[in-house]
Length: 349
Image 1: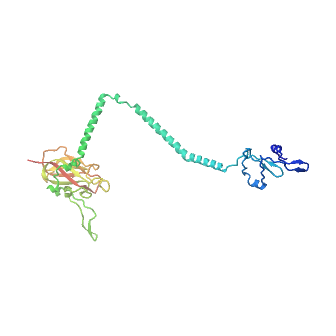
Image 2: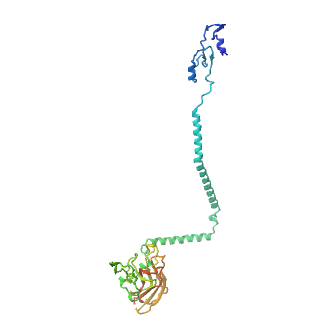
Image 3: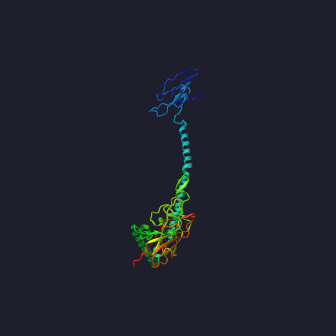
C-alpha cells in the first residue's frame, strides 16, 4: 500500500502516472525540503536529530523514502529512550532506607524511650515537691527549736575549726602530760619484779652453726621513750607478764599510758601481740604487794597511744608502779610492750 501525503499530493509533488509511463514532477513546492536517508544510516542511527523546521512553515521536517514511499515521522511524538541512571538511583535510595532502619532507627527508638522515662521521673519528683508542706504550715515553736539547733551546731563547728588550727591540740593527751616513768628523766626498771624476756629461737650470729649471740631488748625499752617503730619493743614470753618501774619522782598517780604499734603500720595488718587486759599497782617499797589502782583494756582497733585515767585517784604518793599484763590479742608465744608511761602530780610537800 502506497502511503502518500494528501498535502503533498494536492501540491502536485508526486509524479503523474499514465499507465506504464510516468512523468516527473513539473513543479516542486518550495515549502518542502526533501531528505533522503540511506537504509544503513537509518539502522545505525535511529535517534538521529531531524533538521530544524522552516521558520516560515513552523512544522517538523518530512523524510522521503526510495521507490516513491513517503516516510513521515514526528520526533516530538516518539517515546523517550529508557534511562539507566533511574534504576541506579532507585537501588541507591533503597539501600539508604535499609541502612537507616538497621542502624539509626533502633538508636532513635532507644533515645525516645529514655526521654520518656526521664520525663516520667521528673513528673513524679515535681508531684512530690508539690505535696510537701510549705513553711507557713510549721508551728512557731518548732521553727524556733530548729533555729536554735542550727545556731548551736554553727557554734560547735567554729570551736572545732579554731582547735584544728592549733598543732598542740592535735597531739595525743599523753604528750601533753609529764611522764614520770621516763628513763632519761631518772626512772629505772626493777628487774627483780619484771618477767623474763622472750628471746628469738633463731640466733642473730653463728659460727659454723654454733649460736654465738642473739639480739633481744630488755625491759628498759618500754621506758626509754623511743619512737614507735616495728620491732622496737620489749617482749616477754606468753600472754601474761609484769613490768615494774621506779618513778623519777614521788607522784600522785592520775593517768597511765600504753603505746603499741598501730595496726596500719603492722606488716600483717594485725597486732595480736599487743596487750589486752591490764592492771596497775602503786608501791611504796620493792618488797610490798602494792595497792590496786585500776584495771584497763587496750583496744587494738583504737589509737596506737591510749591513755587511761584511774577510776578512783587518791592523794597517796607512790614511788614505784607495777604494770601487770593479763592477756594479749591472740599471740601465744609472746607479748610486746612498746612504751609505758605514768602521769600525775608531784608531792610539793
